Image (cartoon, rainbow, N blue to C red):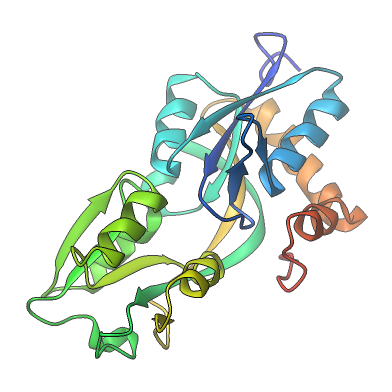
Amino acid sequence: MKELISTGKLRVGVAFAPSPSPLFVVKAKDGTVHGVTVDLGNELAKELGVEAEFVVAPNTGELVDALEAGRIDVSFMPVDDERKKRIDFGPVYFLVESTYMVTEASDLHKVGDVDQPGIRVVGIANTTTIRAAARSLTKTTIMAAQSIGDAVEMLTGGKADAFALSRDSLPPFVAKLPGSRIVEGGFQFTGVAIAVPRARPAALAYVSTFLEKAKSSGVVRSAFDRAGLQHLTVAP
């Protein structure tokens, strides 16, 4: 499978955050990363009979760049039309809803409340979420942070009024900030999928077969459970 392991290793791009999700991994004190996409990357490498080498980025926008440039062989990220122009996607393994987190002092309670003059929304740079927020918001100021940690600091530090992210990723941050909440409703619904560089049909076919088998065999379910995500559902 030369298209997928041209360097003799499987270079897997993963995005990190302070808390795990079906997309984001977390870093241990020794610098190693753990989470759903790490487990899936290791499983794919095992099937290929090679070592997995993880390339860790603060956001999925950087992973798109790395895939397009051929610096990584495979990754996992939300699907959107802009990305489809640059990379190829295989099957979806998780369905996400994007929404907003606000602080206790906020009078924003629903997604529709956010689009007001003077409201500052922070999202992660070059991601499907911030692009979707920008399409749906016409009166607010939209700001890009390089990582989830930076965005949370902007919200808690009073530099932003709402933080745009997938609903499944927000509860750990709400738990750490007394009185904060997730607003009602969502502004984007998409899937998180496996991805490879464009024009590598054999690689795309291989990872697509791998992921469908991983879903049906329970490998993806087990990865969710090990990450503490027992309450979340694997996409059919």
